[in-house]
Structure formats: C-alpha cells, structure tokens
Length: 352
Image (cartoon, rainbow, N blue to C red; front, side, top):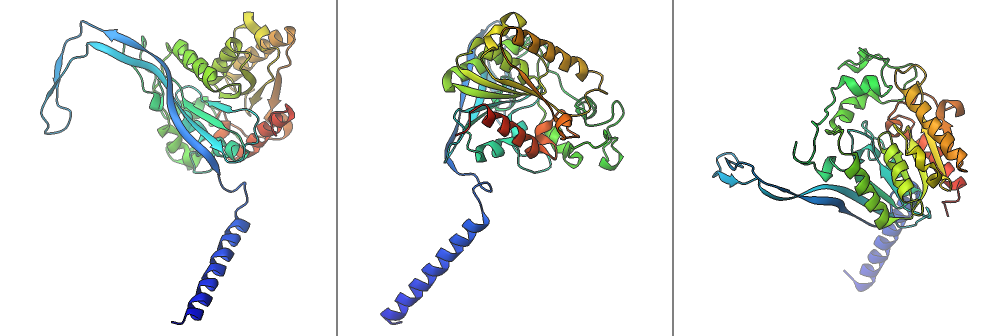
C-alpha cells in the first residue's frame, strides 16, 4: 500500500467517524442522556451501641464450612444512612435537590419505575440538578439493627394486597389480583399495573420506633451538603418538615409529594420564610384515610400561614392531571408531574 493511499484511507475513516459522532449527537439531545461531572456515595449519621450479657453460639457461615464462634457481646455501629449523589456536567439548579422516600421503601422510589421507565432521579439530573438520593435509617443499604436491643418494635412487612388497596391504585379492599387483567383499578388509574410485582420487590421492612434516628441522620445530611431543597414523599414529608424546622437556614424549599404527616405546629414560624408546596394525586375523596391525612396537612399550613409563611398546594386533578396514585413518581405520567415540580422550582428562582 502506497503512502498516498494510506493517507486517503485514514482521511476517509476519520471523515466516517466524524460523521458517525455527529449523527449520534444529532439524534441524542441533551435531554436524552445523562452527563455527569461526578457521582458517588457515603454513609452518614448513626451511633455506637454496646451489648453485653448475650450467649455465644457456634454458626456455620457457609454450607460445608467450619463452624465459627459468634460472640454477640461488644460494640455495634447502628442507625447510619446511605446516600448516593449525582452532580451533572452542566448544573442548572442553584441548590442541591435531596430526595427522601416514603415508608417501607428506599431511594429506589426515585430511580427506574417498576415498569422500566425513567424515574424522577434521571429527570432532575437531566434538568441540571445535583441530586442526593438516600435510603433512610433502617432501609436498603443503610441496614437495620437488632431487636429488641436497638429497634424496640417488630418490623412491619406488607402483603402484596396492602399497597394496592392503600396507595389508591385499586378500588379498595379486595381489588388486588395476581392477574393484572383481574385487578380492580380505580377508574383512570395511571399506575403501571404490569410492573406491580416489581414494585412489591422494592418493599423493605419498616419500624414504627425509628423516627428519631431517621430525623437525626437527615439533619446530619442537611448539615453536610446544604443549603438545599428537599423533595420528600409520604412518610418523608413529616421528616422534611421537622428537619426544615430544625435547620431553617439550610433548607431553602420543600416539595412534599402527598406528605403523610406534618411538622411541629408549635414551631410553624420556623417555616415562614421557606417556600413549600404539597402535591396531591387523584382519588383522595373516596379513600378511607387520605381525606384526613390531607386535612391535617392543610391545617398545618394554616399555622405556617398565621406565622407569615405562604405554603402552597398543587392538586393535580384540579390542573387537569388525573389518575395519579399515591406513588406519583411511578405512575405512567410521572414525567408530566415532574415537569410541574420543575416549573414550581423555576418560579421560586432556583433554576439558573
């Protein structure tokens, strides 16, 4: 092969490669992929606990292995929290966005939806937000502690019927069926029932005695990475209120998706300068519990308003977004709702 031919072939291959890259860039806009500056994870919070007076035992760790003596007496690390963070290549959110999940769940809530679509984690990273997504104390990669020495109550596990009926997916008791074709859905439900089994695989045990260590770990996270915005779902709602009340100088906004509780009414004034919005899905009026849960939050809003704050409510059906279950971030229109949140954040001046 002559030198000239080699040169022409090299130029030709370079041209083809350039055209290929350009073609890919044309097909993939900035909203179709995730560009990260960095990502990582860490554990935060927790404490040491010393146990004594426990009997030792011999345990075979692996099948066919040699038994080892286990002495449960000693020092343990407990009540820590796992946090994963993502920093986009082009930051547009002025502050980090902290995502806090609901009861019996973990940070998976905000990742891929049960039927395989993109979740809110991806959406907000693509919008240019630095995101911290955590597994609260006792959940997922945070791990849990022994009963009754540290966690003083039994863990709560849910049947497959429970969330289907309680999270406003199905039409009340008896609406769940293993066969999606036989499920009795609320009319117009947006929940992807074909992914319901995958949703139930995300469930983890929860305890009713761990609010204090959960709030302590969230507060330590806020101290580490904020000022910030907290986006919280369900059980995460009251945690977000209480951490914001404890750190009003660091929590700059609250986005609460169907909060399952409130903050401390006696400390409502701590929230008066923090923009906050509560977002509600559909089918609340016909539910056995949610009218009261929502009313409690609206009453708490009155206390914030009396102290000079301006809490807001976005009722999705009232703005034409219908069919949402309690798991709004997993519903088929999850990105439409995410866009509503993005618009609210932009309206508060948090987007560059």
